[in-house]
Length: 225
Picture (cartoon, rainbow, N blue to C red):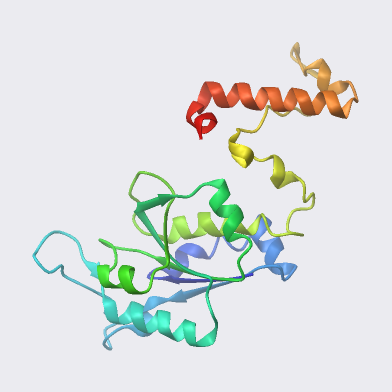
């Protein structure tokens, strides 16, 4: 899989992709991530990529021309399954969406900044809009990193134990069950006996029941979904 990210501040994305699971995915050549500074397509020698809003109002807007030129440049290089804009006023990212995107081959992500991007880019170039929550950040760089991480860890061969992702929270609309490790007793707090039983079927049943219980207590809406 290849992910291209267009951003105003590429420096914000250096660390998230240089460590841990995404680093491993890149080293295994299972995932390619390229971060591109939007100022390469600035409209003048001053590096301008934003301007004031028509109609007045606080905050600058990312201009049409730089974004359109950048997107068209990349589309000449390859066909993208999705051109994604990270914005708080979009559909919320969830596990099923990450699962679906992990099956794609090429993704182009636009990281918004300032007051956002010109609406004409959204209408004529963007194929999917994604939010990571009902709040506003300084820019779309961190959401782009979140999306890349959520997708990248699902690629076959990235995780040492490929079954691990199957038991994450939100797979099958359930929160993950409680987990324990050694020692079996700490300060008088004991690991549930069932987990020490060595019976895989009973352990699986216990985990499922705990997942349902936890989901009902903390996120009952998931059960309705």
